[in-house]
Image (cartoon, rainbow, N blue to C red; front, side, top):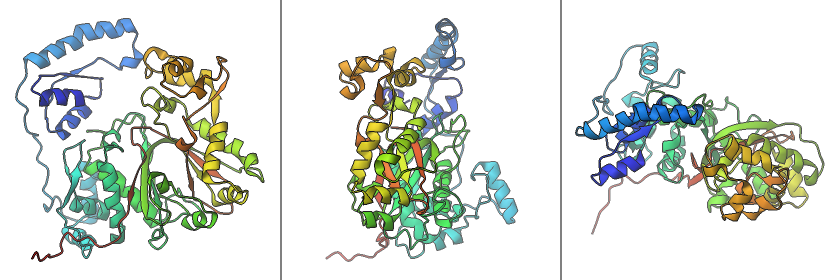
Length: 466
């Protein structure tokens, strides 16, 4: 759609060819970019599940006609037909059951009961924050809606967030507006979902859990902030099944993961936010979209060299088609996450290992046979042009030389291009030797970090100019 919108902006007529089932998403995307009712030519069936002969026949007999029709039967771009309620409109009244029923019918909730976002509740949520409710922080490219402080607060009330979480929600909104993160990809078919990672001295005081059950619901702060993100993506960015969300299966909403600030300070390791230039004592939120994850349970060993192979095996086991983000669907954009329990982090630190040492060791051990890597990025997918081998990709300068140390198809190659591509966090039960590995979705929600500013906003301050 972006190429078509660029053409339309230059005054060149276009028709976008989209896969069967994606016409609704395509129209929502064009509407978000300011072009409603863009001409589309929908293909027949899924292109990956047809033979070349069948695909060619369907394209010639049906899709070409739709392209021509879209070019010759054009009409002026119309304004959206649906009129959305204004910010202060009363959209429903009645009992809390009536309100929740209406919100479910409209697709405004995640299916669970929400706190009704009355004007009084939203105003109370923002009271004393110093932030202008109508300040626009950006525009949701997927829907064209303004990202206002008011809309953030509405969804925060629905999710049950406390007012003192507002600075975190503002920082998360900054991430959603950052092109590096690419929030518009939040509904891709593999169904990756965002993982929020929080770090800083303020998190414990706000009630965020970094200990036992660090990835489980049950702690209000972690759960409500994670829920806010899902609601905000639904209600403001348009990620519902009728608009942008094309997840084949999807993941459940992920609660916010909080790094163990005290443990990191004790062992002298940097948090994830330091990868983006922030200091150990900054309050930071980092986010990326994850496809899948696995528990690495009961890690056995008394030295780093004992436990690294098990941990590396866990990271490697999470990666399959995701490796196309090394080269193919993305380029050098696969960056998995390993969450270590404090016990394992201390074991390594007490042996004199820095986090960089851990990353280097994981890079050396988290490897798979080259033939498997090539199947994931080529033989079993259409994401690498020409289905080239790793040796061919190295010869063309597209991936590092480490992928072609020999021509043995069973040689072990890394799942990432360098040690720094393996993210390491510390959280969880400090008495257990467990870890958790996540496989991320590369540029479809690329790692992005923002500082959380807990100082009062000054939007509403009166200023005297001399």
